[in-house]
Structure formats: structure tokens, C-alpha cells
Amino acid sequence: MTSATAPADAGGERPAKRVRKNPKARRAEIVATAREVFASAGYAESGLAEIASAAKVSKGLLYHYFPEGRPQLFVSVMQELLAEFQQRLRQAAKVPFSPRTRMEHLLAALFGFFDENPPAYRLLFRDPWVAHDDTVEASAIATRVQISSEFAALMATSGPADDVVAASAGMLGFALANVELCLAGQLDPETAWRVTCEYATSKFTD
Image (cartoon, rainbow, N blue to C red):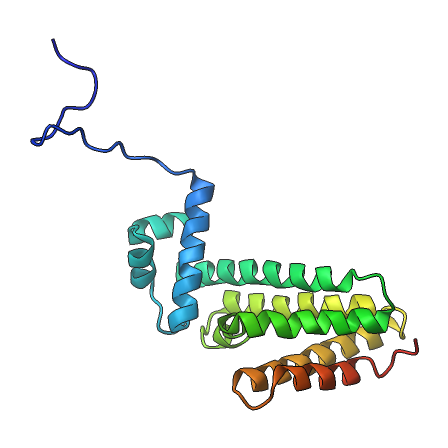
């Protein structure tokens, strides 16, 4: 009498049943692996072949989830990083204190995030410009705009709307320049945070 189950192999053991993963879970795994590869080697040195190998999938499957290839996959990594970063900033800005103190907490979160995740700075603010891809560059610009908006939210009562937009963009640039100095070992994070706070809160009156 024959069995309806899979036949046993030569050793008497039945082969393991292949488990088909949920597409959403599979895509998330690919993005997570790509993030590790990009963080380790940088965008310029990370091809789809390396990512496919690390993820243990075929290049064809990568293209199934990311038809536009490496740029689209990199943008997905950037978006994931940005979401984590914004969550950290927003949590810090929720403290029930004055706008000045909330700004100090927000900046502490900013410096802390990149101190804990140095590759994140390169992936969000450096590598997009070596990609030479319009989609990646557009995502990088959108990233700066969204982060600037976190600063602008705390400065909304400090002047005209256009002034706030300009000031928040300048504040972000100043903060990121100091982050870069910290990552290069030319400035310690505590000093960078203190000086940035002095600059960022100079217009607050409370």
C-alpha cells in the first residue's frame, strides 16, 4: 500500500517540506539583509549579487520584489532608517517641557542615534549622492525635508512660516555637520550636542 506523503530518501528520512514565506515577510527580510550589506560595504561596492547571496535568494527574486533593482532597494533601506530615526526624534520631542528643553532632547536623540548607528549617517546622507540615480537623490532630499520638519514643529511660534522653514533647514545642516565631525573623531558627542543646542535655542525666549 502506497503512502500519500512524500517518499523517503535513501537514508529512510523524508525530505524537509519547503515553507513558502509570506511575501511581506520575505520583502522585509530582503530589505534587512540589504541594509546590512549596504552598511558594511557602502552603496557603490554593494551589488545585487552580493545582496542576493547574503539573503540566500536568487537575483530573480530580488527583481520580483524590486523591479527597478538596486536603487529601489536602497531607497527602501533609507525609508526604513528614516522611520526609525523619526520615531526617536518624535519620542524625544514629546517630553512635557518648554520648547527649549524639548529641542535639547530632540538634538540629544539625533546625536545618540548616529552615535549608536554610525553607518546610518552614511546611508542617509552620503551614499545617496554616489548613487548617481535620480530616485535615490530625490529620496535623500525628501529625507532632509522630513527631518527638518521635526525641528520646524518646535519652532513654529518663533517667527514667520518661511523663516521657520529656512531656520530649521539650517539647524539640521549645522547638527549634521557636527555629527560628521563626531564620526570622524574630531569632536566628542557631548561637546557637539552642547554647541548645537546653544545654536538651536538661541532664538527661544523661554
